Image (cartoon, rainbow, N blue to C red):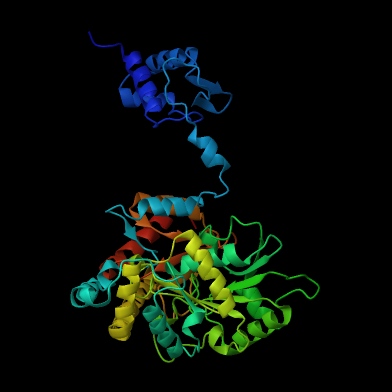
Length: 471
């Protein structure tokens, strides 16, 4: 005979606990949702829950709900490992709400990614990668570990690339990393101490990742507007900045695309020099400057080796290649390279091989090609913003990279807009990802979305705003 319906619920709960789907300390679904799932009335669900509670398998927490009991004495339960105790006590916090949702939704097939900060798959040069592998695979490829600072041939190519940016360095002052993000992680682990102050311009990409949030150093946010207004006196006169650093993205900043003038860059350098504060310059977008000469980097202007320079191929060539680099004082680079070997023994030797050949033979032509495509997509997005959103907000002229930083004129519920846009299969990046004070802003990106979807997506966003009276 078939089991009673309430017994089916009991068996499923026990099965899920023993197979790790439900763990001690986890909340079970509501009675309403269980009733709907099993196509039974709530009385049947209550009967099942009461029996599970009598066996010590479930417990009620007052005003919170019903949870899997945190005990190991029930004869029916064989899996009592409480992973939540490990997760909850970890020093590494989860990503903020928006980032978790973005990571969850980005790869759903029907999602239109209106803000994604990476190149479209159509702009990734996979044919050239294939050509590199086919033509040169048997000549110089090694899949062994590389030396601590990275493949010497790749470092020579990066030295040549840096010289085109006006940066004079030696190969021993270059360390290859698994993307610029690993460079940030190495700096955090290798150079910062608990009393450090990490001075960060805001809004900033650095606020959207956890790289520098797990250490005990104090993060000091300074808005870009504040820095520009107080360009002659950024730092407090009587404050101790021992062991601190200044992180900035001074050319084609993410998310705002702001670029400091050369005079402002000199003044920031001078003040950091007087305070003894090293600068971490994130310069991963500058090659995507659309028209004319790329503005000078701080590293180029630096005559005392106080700048640690971050570069990467992730934004210009391929995020999956995972190739970035640090350029700086040789003793610092030696130290960070040693730390890198302790962590992961270095970036993929195969990726380093491909990147070496790429920089030697393909890079310049590729950059010119994708800049033209990005400029066209940028123009399409600006036209759509002008048509559908210009009466609600504004943005500054865009001189390169991927982004348009849109600011609303009036207060708007961005969390509600984010959720409602997701309901319409549109993924956006609210400004709060980059600063808790940017709750009036959105970061748009024209680098990933198909240009044929740009206008319709922004039109749909406007309809969501109007339909729900969000402004």
